[in-house]
Each structure stands twice: as C-alpha cells, then as structure tokens.
Image: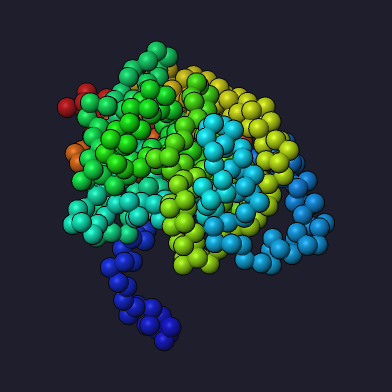
Length: 437
C-alpha cells in the first residue's frame, strides 16, 4: 500500500463534512448527468436539469460572445478581473430597471446581488433565516407545498434539519392528470418557529404553478408573522418565462426573489440572482466575498445586451416558451399512448420542463423503477428525494418520478416508452404474485 493511500485512509473529517454526504439527492441527480450507457446499449437521459439547446438562443449568445471576444477591453475585464462582490453593476442596474417596470415598484442595483448559481443563493439565505437565533428560538424554512426542489434539502449548515414542509393537496383531473395545491388550512407561519417561507414557481419537480390567490395568501401569512417570502423563479418570470398558464409576476418589500440564467440556456456560467431589500443583498455581497471573493462576470456580460435591447423578452416569449410547449405536448402524448392501460397519472404541466408522473401502488415504488430503468440506460429521478421536511411518511412520495423532456425528442420518446414498459413489468409481477398466493 502506498504512503499516499495510507494517509487518505487515515484522514478524519469534522461533523461539518456530513453536510456533503454522497447520499444527497442532488448529488445523485448531478452524477446521473454523466452516467454511461449500458454495454452495447443506448442512453436515454431524462434525469438531470439540463435545459434544451435552443438554436435561436445559442445563436444570440454566440453573437454577443463574439462581440466580447473582439473587444479587447471587455474581454480582458470579463476573464481577467474580479467583479465587485455584489456583482456586475451595469447588469444589476439594467435588470433593476426591467424589474421596476414589471413589478411597478422602484428597484435599484442595490436591490440585486449576483451569486455563483442558485444553490449558492439558497445556502446563504436558508442559513441566514433558519437555525439557531440569538433570542433562543430555533426557526425553520417553511415549504408550503411538498414536493419541492430537491436542491433545498442539503442547504442547511445547522445542527439539525431546518426544512419543514406541508404535504400538497391533490386534486384529481381528467386525462390521467392531477394538480397540487397548497393546503392553506394546514400551512402555518409562526414568528417564533418560522424563519422564512420558500416556494418555487413554477415548481421543480412537478411543473406546478402556485396560483395568484394561493401566493397572495402565503405572502399575507408571511407579513403577519414578520418573516420573508422567498420565491424561487429559476424557471419562471421574467426569465426564462417557462410558465404555460396564467400567473402574475410577484415581488414586494417582504419578498426575496431568486432568479437564474441557467434555464435561459446558460447553466455552464453558474449565475444566480437575488432580488431583495438592501439588507439582504448586502448579506449576499458579504457571503460572496467571504466564500468565493466575487461572483461570475461571464453570465452578466453575455446577457446584459439582451436586457438593454429588450431581445430577452422576445427570446422568452417567442422562442423559449413555444419550444418547451412543443416538447411537452410530444412527451405527454407519448406517455399517454404508452400507459393508457396502467394506473398512472401525470401532474398538470403548467411550467418548467418536467413530467411528474404518479405510479399509483407501484410494487417496490419508484426507487425500484428508477434503478431498473437506469440499468437499461433510461435515466430519470425517483420522486422521494423531493419530499423533504415532512414530519410523517407519505406513500405518495414513493410513487412519483420526474422525467426531463428537454432533450432530443427521439431519445425522450423511446426513453418514455422503455420506462413505461419496465413499470408495466413491475405491475404485472405483483399481479402474478397475487394469483400465485
């Protein structure tokens, strides 16, 4: 055994290292992005959150990139200089102007901070508003609806879990569909035990879009309790605009809006955006300086011209939204055709880029389905990862699965058909076992 290997085997990590467990759902999801196809087989990647490669969007970004590369000064500053810890000031100023018009409220660059991706935003925000407080209270991040985004689950850097969720209300619809709603009778916000409320709109994984009336009631509960409302708009308004139903953009002085450039088509540049009161954005600024010196300059530099000439709105409304709606319709038709004889429902896909499929009473649950499918090259995400913060078990959490339909249509179609064929085998195995008994 080499000296290097012996040293590694003897290494000791602190309890802090437990926050970086390989069992994390987000770790598994991201690792699955690079999973290899089975020997001699084809890979059907429908798991991770990679957005679609949309030619019109990529061409617009390529033109801007060429302009930046051709400008000696801009290029040198973009790749050769640290940005300010609160982020690209010209980008923040332009975005503040855009958001002021959208929300009909005055915002400035001081209301905006840039981070190295949304995960970095939520790590700071969740730990700033939850955990141990100087007044002796332990406060939670309240999730008004479960399931919610899997990436929230491992954000806490506290002594015990900080998330607390309220199970969604399930409304059954026609055409093998269902829709989640916030159970407003059960959902509580307390000034003593709640540090902040967080919801994504639209929701990853389900594609649910919290209604205007639900959002307004949640916002009022937050104001009454004196806690902020965090809205994760990574798929929403004003960009990338992946909402396919009626929804009013929302922001007020008690709201922290988190945006991202990833689903606009720029996941590789890791750019998160926090829109909030200056006290919050200054905290983000300080965290940027302490944790990483400065946020990225690349994303803001590439997107600034799109804001300045209003091309951003055109791309979102006339290119990105129709692109995903077309992919969604194709994936839904494929799923319905393949599963018409099975007890399967899909959440009404009002936003984002996923089909959230409910396999009722599936033998072994969707973790077993995920594993069997992955062995055959069909990559999805088992649903139980998205039900964090619940205080009791919920069978529904073990019967759901997320499908990303943003990829190659041919692979998505065949991947869905293969997935349903595997699910059918699981259902039939239980039927055969019951007959044998």
